[in-house]
Image (cartoon, rainbow over all chains, first blue to last red; front, top):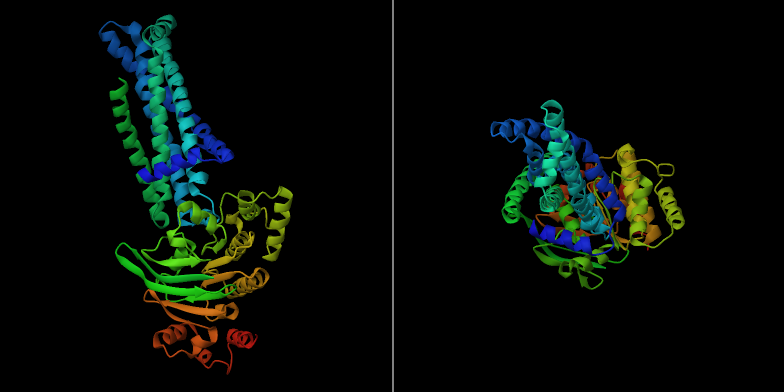
Length: 235
Length: 266
């Protein structure tokens, strides 16, 4: 897997870049995931609104609801949940597509044509994931913050000034950047694992099925492991 | 000329090839036959450099493909054409785009020239009017023809055919064989055809090789294979042919008649 990633990196920086394939994959991985990200972001924010209000009201700190929701989303839940959603929606599809290309010898055909499968298949997915996942994370965070306000502000009576004011008071740029660093790493993990599993899928439909399952499981676990490591380092 | 020397290849401890050797002269097409599971497709992929042998050499124009670095291999491989068993058409592209793909990616031809070349190649394989179809909309025979057009569009020096007629009805089998023979006459490539279409495949090849037990057990002309004393080869051919086919030159089948004619031609 290490060699695979190294080759993918090499072809990322060795021209020519297949620009239109990158755009196509950004459309698939990024644009295609917006709806699921908006939905999960909204509901995550709404749940945080309820739980945060309940917890903070017990210690008499309801005014900090905005900062609690925002910090939870920006530093932790936004990057992790967005990456897990992208893994399930787009990563699995990438693995299945590459797996089918492997078993139907389309990847071999690229090699016979004297073209690098890394350049045509892996690099576009890697770049698309590196670009899309941070953008989707930002969407997740913003929608989640408004979801939290919908519950905390509109339903439970926390004022907009208190909610958003606390956010501004207790957040800084470092919190935003930590989330973005994480999301870039998670994007790389998703592309790396899902492309690798598809690229080396076993024989037949069962091989593709196993590769897809392994890709989703391994990506998800690695995202959580990386999240722990990055949190430890960037804390 | 391609010289394949003493190829060994194992998968998971099972030795598939145990020292297979073969020589393909310039302009010569060799039929590689043998029982299923003997490693004919593996042999072909080793020749194309898609797999690396455990030991042995594949020498093309004085260069050992097995010893080349990846980028050298990629360049050399672009002189090869490979017709995969299932066509291996890119299913997200139309037939036209599939055939145009190698030209767009590996040449600096204008789109107008590419269009002319692609339409001409599609006409040669009898797919005029099918250029806007996607692979999923093609029959097995049409997919093979489209894949053949893509393989031939850059006029390869070496053509490798992996069971080009498997799963097709006898009429389509005949037409694919005719097509391969016609393109061979037109382009003069050297090639290896892995096939189970015995004896039909003998009609357009210059040499037959039998892969059995991990080695090339027999190598000779289509006429010689019918006269071999090797019991294994005879049994294999016997299983593939009607009994009267062994009376070579005496009567039927049609394909042996064709061989006889060709063998008499200088």
